[in-house]
Length: 70
Image 1 (cartoon, rainbow, N blue to C red):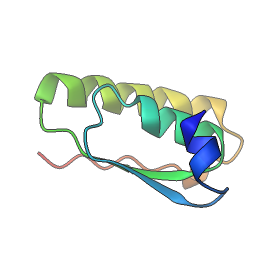
Image 2: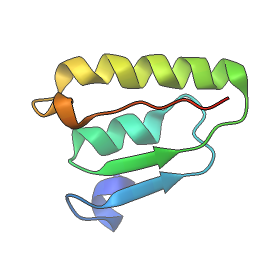
Image 3: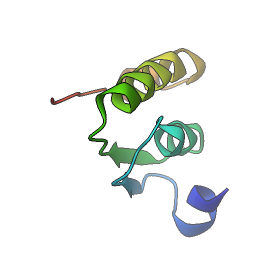
Image 4: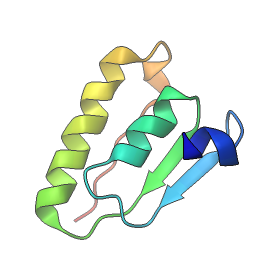
């Protein structure tokens, strides 16, 4: 809800403490781009999986990329 309230379609949302990727998933659902940063490997693994699963629910999934740098 906050992503929709404080950004416009096509904007990029920055989440410097991504956790399990909720902001990235929410942003993709409402037409926003997102950049997420997470230092904890266990959370990073969960976030990466959630974002990849989200790819199957989007109509423009070809624009969704996941890049993990460890």
